[in-house]
Image (cartoon, rainbow, N blue to C red; front, top):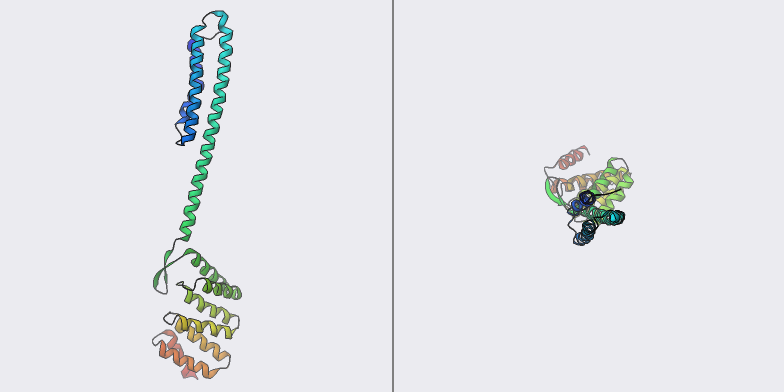
Length: 249
């Protein structure tokens, strides 16, 4: 079998073309240096092959030329394999880096406060406290009053300065009441009135205290609580209810 000079050069060029095209895909300095070195080796092999073609033109040298060509093509194939490995490693590293920053961005967004409206007031709430409050209230609405009481107590301890704290304390009292625990219900609602007297829930908390006192047969205490409610929070729906209860006694 005999090869012409032009045929050999064309075959070699075709074998190395993907290498040249792939090298421009990456910006990583070390990888580019490694690829450049490999390209230099391929270029040297091309030069050696060209010299063989130029110097061995007689028929007796054809077999040597073919053997040298095969060796060079094997070397070129090996070098191209190394380039492919480098390219794959770079792609994997780039994907990992992208995934890392995507995950980091998601984590940061979870920690960022968001604007919410609580009892008509707009305020900032962190996502962790928002989720804790929502989970506690979901238990309450689902009828798990014991679980809700535990979750609400934990919320108040962890997020005492939260805009949801007064509401959490109020619903804690309701969770106790729903379990038939009037003593703890009264204590919880008294905390609302004492700690957050300006909360929209304070008047309702006093009304709930009076209801629990009636159930405990502490009629005089209930009457006093209703009177204090009317005086402290006139004009509220709770005060109107308190007046009606006093008239009924």
